[in-house]
Image 1: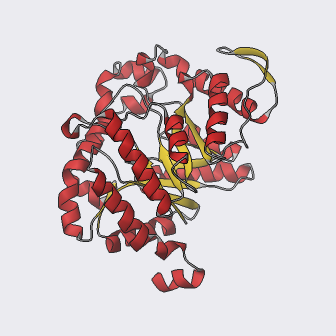
Image 2: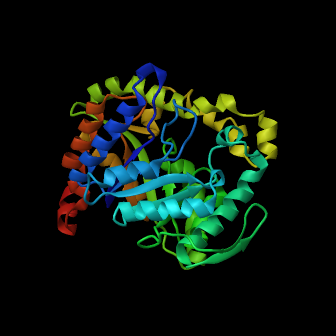
Length: 359
């Protein structure tokens, strides 16, 4: 079992830091995670909404972090393809792959509904732009030169340079059934993003497994889980509450910028019109803990949760910890990484005999 780190780079007003401080701390956290044996660092591409995320250029972050690390891989969850010229993005991917020594992975997505108005992209164009960009990106990374004729992009005999060391592994995820079906068809991995307990995505994972089987592909599932650790479980639950509440609030905060719900539903963004996202911010703290929206407690308590998620999701390849959120103090993130790597990871990374003794 692999274990990774995920970060959204939230910077809420309540726990405000300078933007430079946010990035300096995340670089130190990546370096620390590499030394502690975490397999991946994951962040998203997101623009304009500081309470949600200031991760506007994840590949620049990876290039910087690669100079301070040796083994950890870098994965974007996800590149918002409709925001990009895919021919340009392909060259940037290749440069990042080279600068990270081939440690780059990609996750691709259509993106949150709230990014498109600020990017001057009509909501109704987002699906078509995503599909065309994806097709072009794959061609650009696989073929020496290519041509493409579509609704949004028309290019003739394009050769993207530099070339990546190899085509990066691709993932997708989110709330759309379409993404899980696409991943099954293409043999991609899928990411279960934060705020989605495993039982909330059971139907989508069933679809993914079914389509994988139909196309002869092996499921590959990464589970992202918000976590806060302390040696004393009760103290952890008390300390974490204000950060968890702000984390949920921050992930819903851009909803105030969206068009009316009827327009969202008519333009292929039904999830954002459903009220499901806003409802997350209203869930009582204890219910968030009880229903595994977040994991908070001692290493022994969290070891049981890790064991259960591995048992309940047999195709799971990685659990990725979201342990920096809502402007939390840097040292508390480092503590969670330390406790998890020392007290939990060894129980799931040893020999088969050692695992049997632990379990």
